[in-house]
Image (tube, rainbow, N blue to C red; front, top):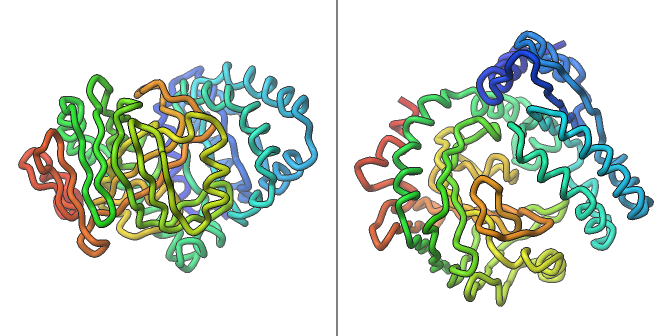
Length: 370
C-alpha cells in the first residue's frame, strides 16, 4: 500500500524539482528500493506530466557481486551501454533504498577503482541532465541516523516536501554575495582554512538536484586552499566510516591528514591526483535538517554547516579538478558543536552557525520556518 506522502513526494520531484515537460524522457534508477508502489508513483507522475518513463531496478548486493567477479572489459561494456541510454534521457531520478549501508564495504580498492573509472563517463553525462537524488525510508537509514523507522520516515517527508520556493528566495542574496567574493575563510576549533573563489559561480540548491536540499555552493580556485580543516561529523565512503578527519592543505593539495581510519583514508586519497584537491565548497541552510543523520544527503544541508568535497568539481562550477571521487565531508559550526566563523573578504558573515549580516538574516532557521 502506498503512503500518500510518497505520492506527494513524487509530485514534488516531477513537477517542481525536474519540471518534466511533455515528450521528455525520464529515467528512474531505483537502487535497493523494494517498494514497487513507490516506484509506480514516480512513473504515474511522469506520465501525468506527459513524459516518457524509463525504469532501472538494481540492488547493492548484485552490484557487489558484479564488482567482485567482473572484469575491466565487463565494466566497460556495461558502462558503454548505460552511457548510450543516459545520453537519450532528459532527466534522471536516483531513488535509493539501502537495506545495508555497508553492503559494498569489502570490495577491494583496485576492483572498486576499476569499476568507478569505467562508469565515470556515465556519471558525467548524468550531471549534464536535470537530475535528483533522494532516499526511500529503510531500517538501515533509520538505524544509521539513530532513529526509529517511523521517526525517520516522518523526518524524510518533512524535509523533502518543505516550501522550497521560500527557501530559494532567501538563498539568492547568499549566492550573490558569494559570487562577488574573492577570499573565503573558515575558522573553528582545529580549523583555520582559507581559499579563493574568484571567478567561479555560486549556485543555490533549492530542491532541484537533491531532496532534502538547501545549500549554496561554489568551488575553490584549485591551488588556493591553505590551512587545516578538522571535521566534526562522521564521514562515510563506500560503506566505510571515518571520524575525526583532519586535512592540511598547501597550495590546494592535501599534504597531511589524520583520522581514525588512516589506511583507508590514504587509499581514497591515492585513487588519483585530483582526490587530494577540493572540488566543492558549500554552506548548508536547511532549517528542518537540524540533526546529524550520518547520511551526506541530509548532513550537508544542515543549517549552520559547511562542507568541502574532495575530488571532482561539478561542471556548473568547474575549478578544473578531475577525479573519480566526489566526497563531501561536513563541518558543523553551531555553538553546540564548538562554534565557528565564516568570513567573506575579511567580513564576518556567519558566527556559530547563524548569519549576522542583514541581507542573509532571512536564512536563519526561525525566519525560514515562519
